[in-house]
Length: 266
Ligand SMILES: Nc1ncnc2c1ncn2[C@@H]1O[C@H](COP(=O)(O)OP(=O)(O)OP(=O)(O)O)[C@@H](O)[C@H]1O
Ligand SMILES: [Mg+2]
Image (cartoon, rainbow, N blue to C red):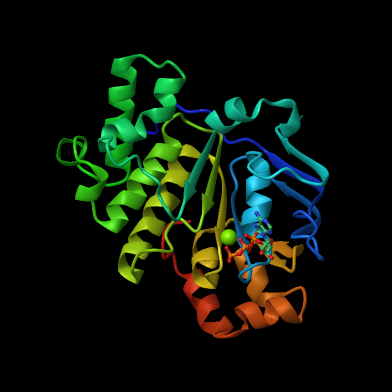
């Protein structure tokens, strides 16, 4: 398939980022220094409560760090007006949050419409994204969210996040609510989208296999800290500590064999 016109992904940098909610005893995120290179598919992996969503949400200012700085292509996100910033950053979450009274097409078109795109350009873009998500445009364009399966709704959510050709796409457990077969198919689709568009993706999961399957770089977190940042294969062959070893350790050899086969063309 011919790659559509798009902006290449942006670089995302965390410098000494910490987040403490209210008067919580421990910070949710501590002193994170991390660079996600332009066009990278980065996966934040770690147990529940370790700070993955908090760190992700500092990128689009849904959470403001209490220390440190987040930069997108070298520009401090605090120098950007939040609403403007968010229009340039796709955000897809588990609870898809489609507008129930809007058709699929109108849901996907929300940000392009806000940005004042012309109608014809929006219509072309909607159909392009539906096709990319393997949803036949003529069948799905005019449906309402309640006429979709869970997996279809999640694909519409991803299409919406991609609509305005963002240079950064944030995904917070976007496939957690669907069964294993649908999830595998959604993983294939997002991997293909990434190969075609080279958008920078920061993807949160606590599923080790999902992380290994999708990531260029896996960022392992524990108790608010980044404990290892490495390509999937390195996590298996050179875990940074016992935490990482136990996280990936179960079936590490099987996982390594799986990585050696092109599950999805990497
Ligand atoms: N708005 C909030 N106010 C107060 N504490 C919060 C808030 N959001 C998250 N926390 C706390 O911050 C810590 C990190 O939460 P976060 O949601 O970032 O974890 P997570 O890694 O995404 O977990 P999960 O895998 O369960 O989604 C947790 O201890 C959580 O209770
Ligand atoms: Mg979370």
